[in-house]
Image (cartoon, rainbow, N blue to C red; front, side, top):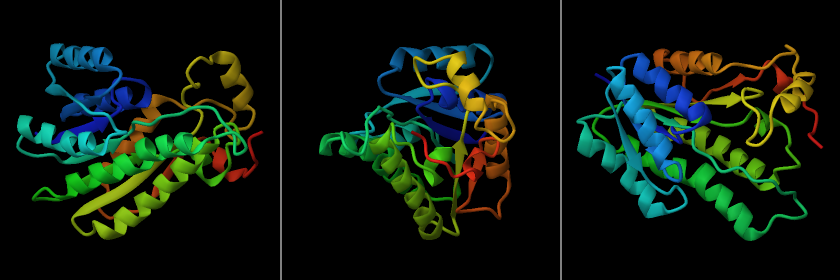
Length: 241
């Protein structure tokens, strides 16, 4: 049985991917930090469905805690085949308002932590696949979440650098979701407004995200690529106000 570690697996896209991988026959390590109760509930539901799953914890803003996450997984299983890096922090600010601490906090969680985890993953004795979750606006501009946006741009560069450095043993790719889920606290009104900016004029689904995960895991001749699952939104190139 193959094993996958999914960061940020207690909620949203991470939860959907972890569930999909379990349904596909993977043993799943469900990483969580602030959402431990939700992560443990997911593990329980997966186990009740007959799947193999366990929880691991770690604060992605803490370098030493990050280094320990893969070690936790390897105390529970003999191997780790796939690393899905879905966890992120996301707060509202602008270029004119964010502080050094705001930018540092976003880069720690959204870019440096994935780098540490990728290093630990690559330090095992066999190859595998790493999948990063970016944001479709990484080629655009999100003026309302400036420090988050900068951190995702760094994460994009880290993804491509790792694809070169970890080849040929480990493949590193990314998925850049668009309008899949509304931000926390926003609902259907937000989705309906944003749908008008999407060339395909609709919201994407979690199943469509999981299809991209399947492709990146299965195709052994793809590395350093980003799949935009955003209905074509990234092609428009307009700034968010």
